[in-house]
Amino acid sequence: ANLALAIDEARVAHEAELTRLRAELDETRNRHAEAMEHSARSHAIETQTWLQNEIIRVQNETNLRVAAEFETKLENAHAQIIDLNKVHEAKLAQVMIQFSELEKRALTAEKHLLDTNNATSSSVTQVRTDFERIQAATEENHKSHIARLKA
Image 1 (spheres, one colour):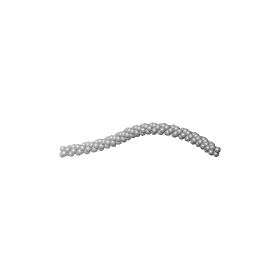
Image 2: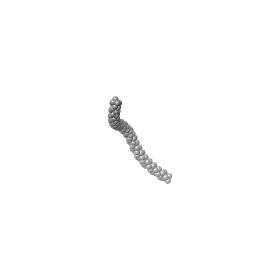
Image 3: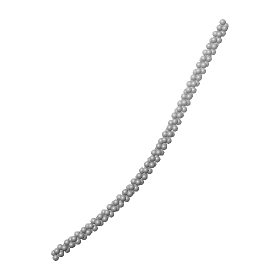
């Protein structure tokens, strides 16, 4: 009976120790789970922060690249405008030279027309004078002829 009692007491003590160890194991598991949860949260926060920083970095790089491309396009457009201005200035200078030549031709034509008018006017005056002289001579000749016929 002592042996059975000793075995029973050992069993009870063993079950108590087993219960205590199970409780300690549960507490350790809970602490471990809390630590893992905290670690996971910290890791998630770190990962989120890293991702946000990466997004900002990529956006900045993209903005810089787009700005550089835009600046290059703007410089190219400016160079094209300068080239077009040079072409237009050259065309304008050519038109101005042509206009000046046309102006000279117009002045020459106008002078020629005035000279021709003066010459024509002078010729008309000469023809009128010659006509009046011939008419007077013809009348004179006619009178002289009539006077000879009467005589």
